Structures are given as structure tokens and as C-alpha cells.
Amino acid sequence: MTSRERMMTAMRRGTPDRVPVAARMGKFMRKYYAHVPDMLTRLLMAHEEFGNDIFAYGPCAPLPCFAPVGTPWRDDVEVEIRHEVRDGMNWWERTIHTPAGDLHDIKRALIIETGSGSGPEIVEPLVKDFSRDLPRIVYMMPDPKKTIDLAQYARMDEAIAERGIVVGTTYGCIDCRDVLTQADFLVLAHDDPGAFQEIVRIGGEAMMAETRYLLEAGRRVIKCWWFYTSPSAGWSPSIYEKMFLPWVHKHVALVHDYGGIYIYYDDGKMGRFIDFYVDAGIDVLMTLTPPPMGDADPRTIKEKYGHRVCLMGGFDAVNEIWLGTPEKIRRTVEQRLSIYKPGGGYIMDGSNIIPYETPVENVRAFIQAGRDFGQY
Image (cartoon, rainbow, N blue to C red):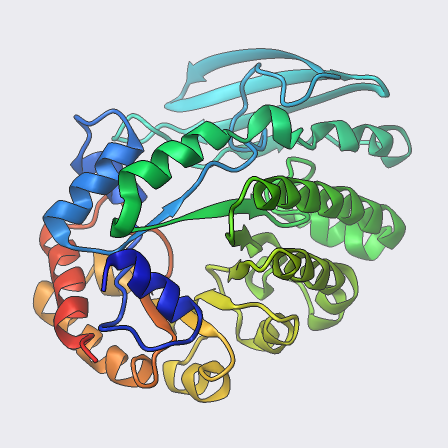
């Protein structure tokens, strides 16, 4: 089988020739291939060097949270931005002019060794007065036609070809939607459920629009990040079921209406909520972070859900891959695959992208062990 055939077979809960080894390592590659300017070339180089099956994220609508730049994400906003570097951090101060009034925020991000940085931290949130600011939040949602680069998808498809798959990507209804800090989201859900539900609605409609644009462009594998709604983010099952789960159902139904495959992503603890995800009709569940970092016990997960969804992940990217040794990694992979592999419907991967600092010999050991012990 080609890598693409292997991935697609597993996602449809079939049994390929061997377990696909996704081993997402965007961060590791950014440091290891620092001399290579673009991620697509890095993906291809890693495939040749390490032998993984490429699982590539296509470009999503660039949410302002991850791109605090002055380029407007829709035609009806203007952005003023001031950037400075101080105390080893990038600082951004923005004023966003919308038809409903101005929004203002401040973010900062640690500058790390690779020349990149950490995810931006909200210092001053956009929303400070809900009666005033809530009508303006809709203008923070990007216009898919303006921001999603379909030409880049085409370039990735052509370059990767049968070496793997390129998945359409979007964020959930509050994930990285650039409105509040996570703590403020939690407080708001209790203090003003109406305002919180409106924020969820605005983000949910944006998520649906972004996904519809990708589906209409021919993307048939859609991955959505839902880590802001995770148990690890502090949500109770009752709030998740009331506020977020209806949007999961709508999102999954939209993808299935186009004959697509739906991948649900959470890189934190997820054990208490998996019944919600699976009952919503998702096709692939990632990332199955094992204890102690997460709570996805491999045997329990396989027995309860392995016949209903494709399982993807199952390895702690920090404690088991980055901080492991080649010998220990190999033993862990052999043991873990003995649980997840039987019956197919499994893709081997880390709990998150393999970190920058991971020794190259650990990456080699992880991928090679997957290839060695993953044969059917």
C-alpha cells in the first residue's frame, strides 16, 4: 500500500498492510531542518529520511490569535498593530476597526531558540465590556474566501501525492477564536451564560463557514481542533453537552453531507467526554494522550471505541518520545501496538506534534518501531 492508501484505509476502520505511522513532527522539523525555509519541503525530506506516513495539515483560516499581524482577515475591518521585542518576548498591541466599533488587545509570546516562538498569550483581551463589545466579535471571524489558500492545498496535494494525506483544517467554536483567555471563558460561562452562548454561536457559524468552503473546494478529510472545549480546559460534562456538543453534531453532519471523514482533535484529557464525541458520529478520534499526561487508557479506549471509530495517537509526545530513550521507546511501541493494532482502524501518532528538543535518535526509534511492529 502507499502511505495515502494506508491512512485512508485506517480512517475508514479497515486493516491496511501495516499501522500507519503519522508521527506529526512539525516542531521537530522546524529545528532539525532549520536550513529549509518551507514546511512542505520539510515534510517530504522527513518522509524520505525517517519513513513516516505524511499526515499534513492544510492551511486553515489564519485566526488572528496565531497571526497577530496587520493584514485584515476580512474586507470590512482595518487593523493597526504595533510590534516590539522586549525581555525576550514579542509584544503586539492591536486596534481593530470594525463597522460596529473598535476592539483593542495586547498579546505577547516567548521567543525560543529556533527563531520561532510560543503560542501568543493574551495580556489584554479583546472583550472588556460585553454590552459594548459583543456585537463586534463577529468581525474577528475570518472570511474563508479571503484567508484560506486553496492554491496551497493544490501544491501540497501534488507534492505529497501518495506519500500521505493533506487534511482540511479548522478550529472549533471557541478554539483560538481570539476573544478571551481560557480562564475568562470559564468564568463567563457561569456568570453570563447568555453572552457566552452568543460567543459560541458566532464562533460556531464561522467554523461551519470555513468548513463548507473547504468541502466545496473538494476537501474530504476535515480535522477540527477542539482543545479549548476539553476537560483539560476545565469544562464540566454538563456545560460541554449544552454549549459545545450541538455544534459538534452540526459540524460532523456537514462533513458527512459531503461524504467526508471527520477527525476530532483534543490533545489533553478526554476520557470523560469520549462518549459525547463518538455518539456525535466522528470518524477519527485523536490524540488519545495516555496517563499520566492524559487519561486515555489504551486497553479501555480500544475495547470501548475501537470498533466504532478510527483511533489516532496513543503516545505521550513529551514523556515517552522526547524524554525517552531509543530502547525504551521501542519497547513502549511494541507494547502499545499490541493493544491498538488488532482489527485495524488505528493510526500511530504522538499526543501532540513531536517537540523541538526531541533527540533525532528518539524520532528514528519511534517511527522505525512503528514500522517494525505495525505489520498486519
